[in-house]
Length: 86
Image (cartoon, rainbow, N blue to C red; front, side):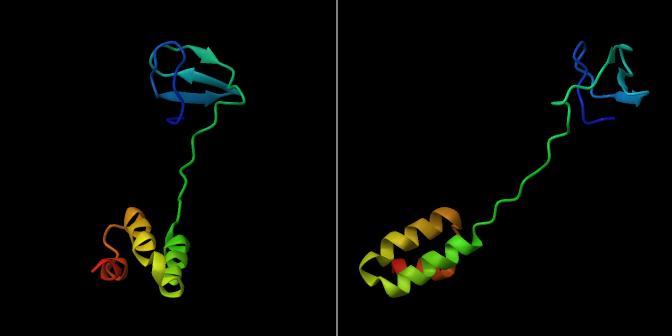
């Protein structure tokens, strides 16, 4: 199992055998703890926030520049938000 780290030598080359993790480098044997699970990636989407702020640019013209700047903080290439700044 390549997702874990040996507690003794730091190697990431571990093999699971009979419910134990065995380091391929130093041959240390461990019982996997409950916290020994691989870290999963997360995806954070901001598109709905950008759409909401673009809507506010239309409905609240007094604060349009403020909303456009918030959009550009999230997406510096947003052309629609750039158009509100000029």
